[in-house]
Image 1 (tube, rainbow, N blue to C red):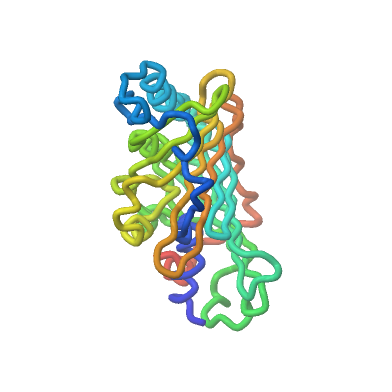
Image 2: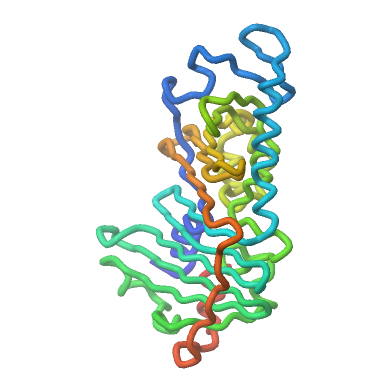
Length: 282
């Protein structure tokens, strides 16, 4: 396996590009007796206007406003990958820890990415039976934090961070694409999202959206809000496409207003990133 193949496989998962796949009928929003409503608030089951339905859409749009303040913790999971981290805009810092695969995998990767504007660092660790046989990894300084040249990671969704777009998952973009929604409980919602224009959301990749084809127009989702009306969980139920299996992409938010600044890595653990590192992620 070459570095290029490693990049194409593991790093695609680090982008939370979920394998595209099929929801069962039982798990499809709108299959219950509750009326399914469009984003405009029309109850399609009864044909009458439903103010409560319009309120459901508005509640979900408003639930992402607190994310804009840039002070929260988050998790994401999908496609055999998990991530957790924090964003702390007051200190212009952020951190994300990504795990792809596990100890039983032939090849696994963990990334620890720290941003403290204007600097960024990444620590890469490879595991699994095939890790030692990948050509070119000797120069990666595995286990060290590698200081990144900002000019070489600008626009790189694996290594970079845009402090003008603070949400790694892009939940605001996703909720703007809601096409149907109903409230299923206290602070709980379900419906469908048109993700065809959501390539900017960090939880989906343009290749996934393309593979979905027409199914991208109505991806099932569930959402939960905390008692303050802030988004606490969003789950996208990605339907099947090609040979890929069904996937849930799960995003959570906690500690609104109470996150802490990311910590810069100790100087003794820092080296400058070599060309091999940028080759891996480009």
